[in-house]
Length: 264
Ligand code: MG
Image (cartoon, rainbow, N blue to C red; front, side, top):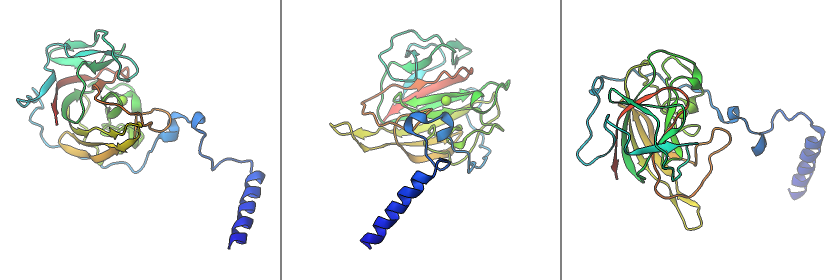
């Protein structure tokens, strides 16, 4: 048995040396492209969401919520570059108009307050006038603890890789359904997030978990978060404590309103 194994190993080695066509090869870590981590199938089913009570004026927060944006100002926010939680104190340049916070083109928006486990509510509106396609249409994102992106995207009749569509944990968890509303209509996220746990050596002893409802439809059911959100390559495990929320500036104007958190 042992001899057979040895012969097989030599055979494999020779076969490997003889082959010069690396069509089977995984890319080297340093050679990965954004496409390396895209998944396109199976496509989650389209679900038409029910009537959402906040469709016109939006919801109101529960009494114990930390209100992060109430339509008036950005006092709870600062500017952020690169979607990484930092100690930035630069003023946020996003515009507040008619009670709506619009993403800018110069920076992402980061909360001054940091959070661990939480319930998050946020409403968003992608532009009614459709411009671009795929990842270039109404792209923003909600970075939990500044690290883990729940994708915001106009995915109404706009296919893209499914692990990067609205409702995904970007490039980590495909949504269970696509309950997107039409461009220009208000949509809601309700997110229950349990932060990851790390030991003193920085190893992740329990991953983060996220449950997400988009327009009242379950799209993530306690999905495990494997590490940081990466556009190229695989998630990285980096130990951290509490972290801010970051709303992504992806160069597309996206409106937000009624942002609140309940710490749990
Ligand atoms: Mg995004």
